[in-house]
Length: 189
View 1 (cartoon, rainbow, N blue to C red):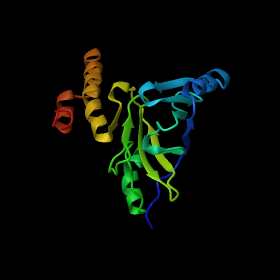
View 2: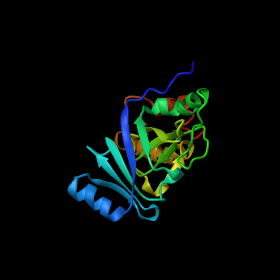
View 3: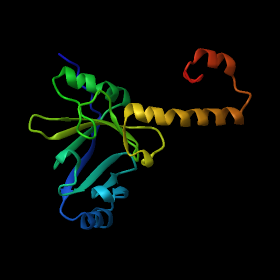
View 4: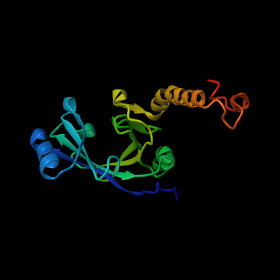
């Protein structure tokens, strides 16, 4: 039997609402949830539950949710398990989906969180999601991209941070020239 993806906990849930502005006021002002992100053009709002990055509640105006969802549940998994999830789902006869509902072989990344996700449907058509929060700075300007696009965008930033650290401390405990010989990625290959 194919290996399942280990779930750590429930991460998020989404609700459809009839009046987004009223619902944002309710969850923010009366319930006390901090507004994480609002997407005016999609008629959607997202709230952190607990500390930022702990859990998420999404609100969608009727008819505005992606993939036509009315109910949605996300399960938190590790990044390594998420990267293997498309293969694991396919082995179980389940189609892995991108954020946009297209069959995929890699996660989608939601830049403003940032988090990576793989979606799939249960036998009744409910939209389910494996999600891993990324230990990186948010990039809301990227929107929602594939995992490979996210990595391509992040690599130049990693190099800049690496070079900045080295310039601040030229007496590092290793030889950069020998490190560059061992790391094709550092040489830009």
